[in-house]
Amino acid sequence: MSHRNTSMECLECNMEFRGLQKKSEQNKKNRRKGVVGGKAPPTHNGGSASHQQIAADMEEYTGKAPSCYELFMFTHTKDHDGKTFQVDKAKEVHDLFVSRRADLALLGEEVPESELFYAAVGGHDRKKRVYGLGSYGRSIFRENSSQTCTSPDTSFEKDHLERKIQKLEETINQQRMELDDVRNMVNDMNNQ
Image (cartoon, rainbow, N blue to C red; front, side, top):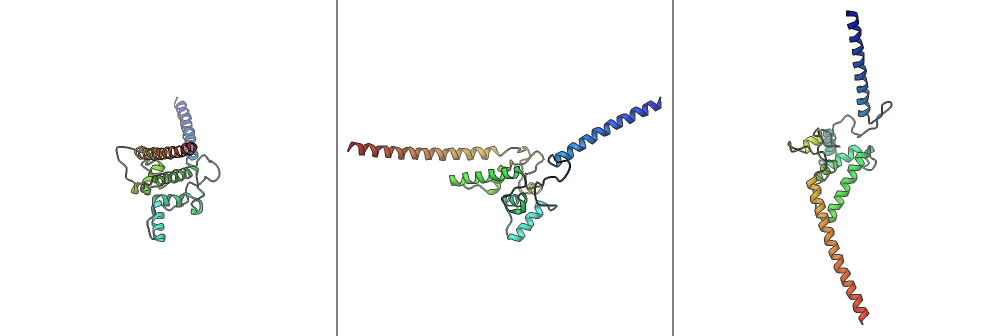
């Protein structure tokens, strides 16, 4: 009777081990962005240095503390060239940041670069991290503890869009007035 229990226990242990093995393989695949064998694609180029250390080195080299965006670009482009991104998500963040900055420039508004970057990366994730800055992001951006920001800051987006719409409406009204002036001139010329 005890021999049978031992066999069942052994079978259960083996099944549990296989389940853990399968889970371990899936976790490995997830960590390596889907690459199980071979070299996993890099997500940034900071090596083992923390973002905080890289920021300190950048400050020592340039004489001023890097902005969040400058640090992000330095750590997420190949050879720090500012053009060749390590992963698609980094390129998307860059494009969104540049687009928002250009839109605000057209409106004649200035928003701190750190706010633009924070909105472009989507704020804090559920683990209170800021994409692209590692643990350095926690020390830079303080989060309202009652709210986790998992999408771009909607109040910033709403204000930005409202200002953009207002500016476009002003432009349309100005163009209508100019068109009316041209029509009046054409009518005057035809009546002469």
